[in-house]
Amino acid sequence: MSTPLTDAPRAGRAPGPRMLRGLSWLVVRQHRAALLSLLAATVLGSVWIVYERSRMKDVLDAAGWPGKELAQPAFDSDGVGLVISALGGLPLILAVFVGAPLIAGDQEQGTAQLVTTQSVSRRRWVATKFAWIYAAVLVTAAVLSALFTWWWKPYRSVFPSQWSDGSMFDATGPVLPALCLFMTAAGITIGVLVRRVLMSMAITFVFAGAVGVFWDEMIVHLAPTRTITYPLDADMPSRLNESFEVDRWIGSADGHLYGWGLCAEETEAASDACVKEHGIVNNVYEYLGFDQMPAMQWTGAGILLAGTAVLTAFVLWRVSRRPL
Image 1 (cartoon, helix red, strand yellow):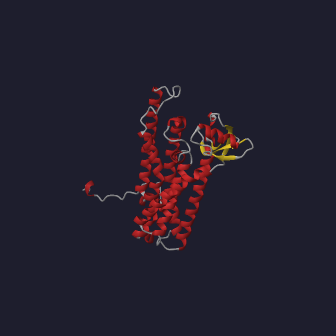
Image 2 (cartoon, rainbow, N blue to C red; image 1 turned 90 degrees about the vertical axis):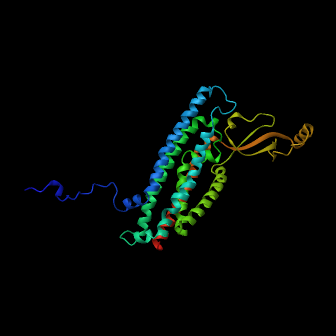
Image 3 (cartoon, rainbow, N blue to C red; image 1 turned 45 degrees about the horizontal axis):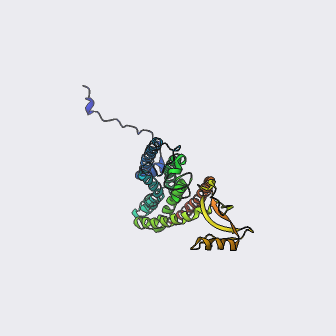
């Protein structure tokens, strides 16, 4: 009599092939929440940017732009402001919520000690974490930056901020990916040194805010400034409409420069007398041009990537010499 099929022992099923094995599989599984969050941010952020661009384009086309000059933005700028704010806050969010807990969490919970007692070295384990997190951060920031640049460039004249404003400069081109990588590396480094998650996140938050202020001040130093001289009574040349003013003076025919407010007298007669007394005939305008923006962005991105490399090398050096 044959044995019923239901009573037969189940044959062992061979596991299916995995896309990832070994240490990469472990790291991805351990940080799947962070990686999935970055994937979701990429997809949802991309959809949001495309939608807001389409909505703004429809409104501007209906208003006759650019053939018809707009007295004020004809579209609701709240959506634009939210996108700019979200992209501006992305580096800080990555530093605090992805970078700081990455290794500090393992140190605090004892996972680091468990993993590094196996056949894998501490340096290889941390390097694998760096590789996966950096790749995810880079993809997210690069995709969002590329889409926002595609939106902003044709419509920059109606945006609430100029190209030289930190929000525009940081959210377009290569700056956003480089800034996100640097902030993430800074968070990881702080976490390794502090070894406690909440304290690391708090310190990283303060550090990221300080870096943001310093970086905004650095923008003007990323390219050599230009100077143009034009007659005192003439209008500013139209090609300077998109320029970023660094400084301005008034000057005499022999090239001597005076502060802009030198002849700002209470009456027109007194002001004219001051101009005549000093022989002032020119306006002198120091500026950065819009055409310098790409070079400035790549220079800034290079500085940030160099900082990322230094922080990464420091963490790898430290973990290879000191137990976690």
